[in-house]
Image 1: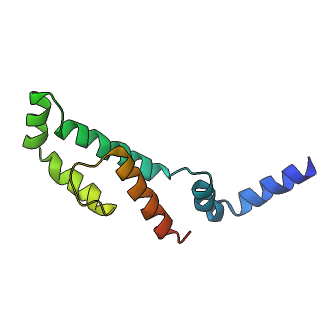
Image 2 (image 1 turned 90 degrees about the vertical axis):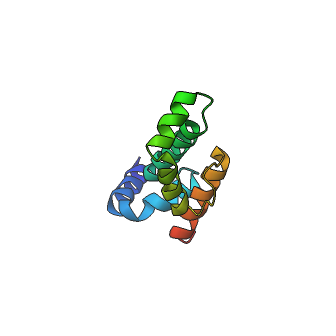
Image 3 (image 1 turned 30 degrees about the horizontal axis):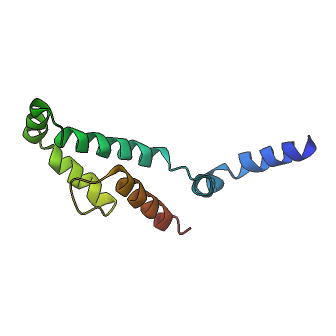
Length: 100
């Protein structure tokens, strides 16, 4: 019980310092990355949908430029990226950002 309390005190004290390494070693991307992954996947599905109306709306409202803006943030060159490519690029970016 005493060891558990000491660990909790250490976590509370150094909370900001250990979050990123814990996320990395637990294979969990930060929430901002996950939101942008979902957004990029959704916009790709919208732009390349089988539904003509969705494709028309996506092209009319410049969804492609939003995709390119998000993709360039994670060094993805094309507009249409698979979910695994997006996740790998985000992991690489996360890894380089915090020098793990």
